[in-house]
Image (cartoon, rainbow, N blue to C red):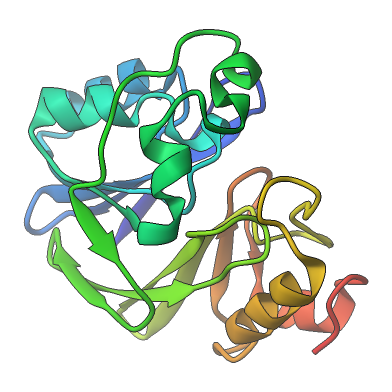
Length: 212
């Protein structure tokens, strides 16, 4: 498993290209505005086939190029059902205004829910419901070669957690969701929506917002 990080858009939102070098296939996790060019170039350079776009949640800074990538590569957008209003209606919560430009039209092709195991690019990807930052938030857990990694969107960051003052946010709910992630092995790598990767063990030991 190879993980490449492409910070994109006005908030430096992380797009993650996760590829299986043996199969030459990949999935994209989150698709911020501006990611299309870099992702397209990397797929071509590495002779990779894109199989799916997975969205951790529907906030504008994570989905700006999802529709374009989905159409260009003829792959489904996979997301939580409760995030549908944010993802499919650019005017919902005035996402269009926050983005600073019209958001591309897109639709969820596959609804994922807690406990689902998706099979794309040779990976078995476990979906974990992690509401609290916003409805429809999902974490995606990969296990490969004895290593675990989880892509959490804006649930938790190195030494911090996601904001809960936007539509559908709730700190008590977020806290419960973070503790779901804390059940993973301490060695599990956490890949957040913004900033550098961290680990379950590091956040359990030192995150001041949610204690283990």
